[in-house]
Length: 223
Image 1 (cartoon, helix red, strand yellow):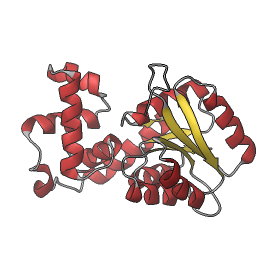
Image 2: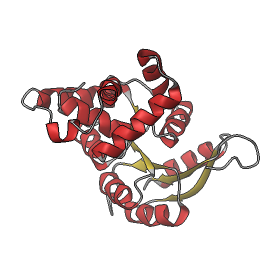
Image 3: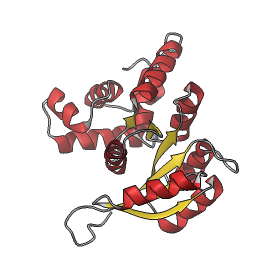
């Protein structure tokens, strides 16, 4: 991210959707927002994977249903090749399977296509800083599915033992949906320290985003 000379960080965004009218309209709306630079747009998942390598966007706004390569498959390929890219998945309806598959693939957010543009911009800004962003329905689906599975699972000591006691505290708060500033308040630490703990947790567990950390925590009974 650079500041484009304005002092405000500029977020590079790629828009991916096979519906031309929706894609061009969304591109136009996002381009008018301060601090957002839409560096490209495309109608297919395969082209999206290629363009991420060429254009290096910080955030990809990805349709979940596309004919050549689904948003889930494209997200998985992007995360494998460019793990520091943040993918926000858009869909007409928050289908349970789509939500779970997108987050498993490494998406850091999941929103309905009728999300107001102001809320989408907030989600893009959150994604660019590594924060999770789920629509209320998506969050309900994710937590509901994971808590159902958790009853039969136990934490894996080999993975959890990598974390310090304080990092486990932070992981529990991530699973509760708290952002870095809220974690800092809860643990009486600075926001920078909270951010460092989150980064260390992701590195130790080999996870691409805090959404994945929350998923891991709930699955392993840590949340």
